[in-house]
Image (cartoon, rainbow, N blue to C red; front, side):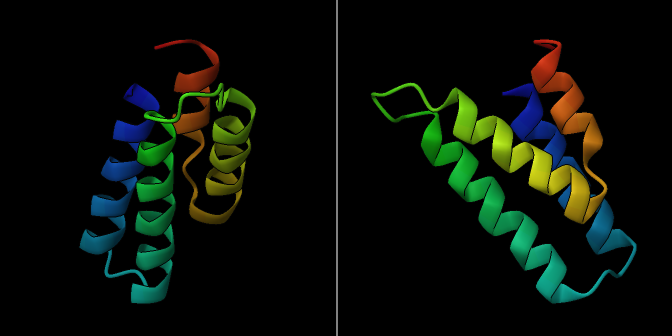
Amino acid sequence: MKALQAVLIRGRAMAYEKADHTKIADLMDRAEYLAGMLFEPQDMTETFRANLVELAERHQCGIALTMFDTNC
């Protein structure tokens, strides 16, 4: 949950920075997808992490990946 929170915080920061709306929308779409994974009956850990890696690369959201990897 902390990783997802970090993604949402990054989205807010991007809005304050007046980032391109398509980039913000992409980040929020991915955040929505991550949230949905939390309710899947099967283990989505690998897919969740893979999406965090992409977010880190595309949206300077490495803190979310770090939080996930360190169980913060």
